Length: 309
Image (cartoon, rainbow, N blue to C red; front, side, top):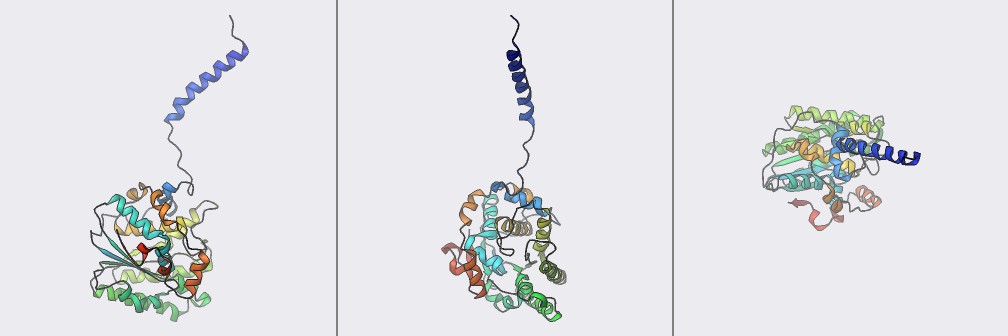
């Protein structure tokens, strides 16, 4: 009996399906667009910022090392939300389970370099077991001075304050890694970011003069801003970090500690993201910063200044 047209059509459809299923199964899945897969936020951060200037050659820390992070609200806010410090903690814990470290959060909202320098020794616990110090300064040096940031006296005060902190650490035989300021607004053309570039360049010069390590957060953010898809936000308010901004910060520090990008990229951050997205309302954080209240006042108990894991 000859087949009807409808039967032939059905047979043709089934043939196409049977042919296409094996082909489609062999094709690799397309990577998720940046900003759509929480498990891959470190993959996104690498894609947005590009490769490291120099690939890490191995971990520079050992178990029981004590690492201090001197900074402003970009760091201090992490006492509350976890942020980049908790992301670093999680990546290290997942990939180097025998590595036990102590993190000291020495960030205070609103602080400029000249406000960090007087408290540097005390807050980084220099001479009390600290073995490595990261120093990030510049956002408030520019943001609080508006059009006066580039006046020679202000830029020189920034340089002198950084040098003082570096020399105190090196005098105690503790290595320093300088970290350039991040951003003020998510635009490569923002005047504030052009001024921040001058401060970042000053910090790079000090790193070279004093033989310090360097993490160029500013360059990473400028590249990420240029590469990010429409609608992606790196910050909450143009300055304080959102999830993707914190991930970029963490990536820069992980590279400085000697963690390869492949190791970071293979780490699923989803479990720790469920813990660290515990936001204090941003207006409260901004009010505290204006009053120079240390943001660890709003922290969960385990984030009061010193973290052991």
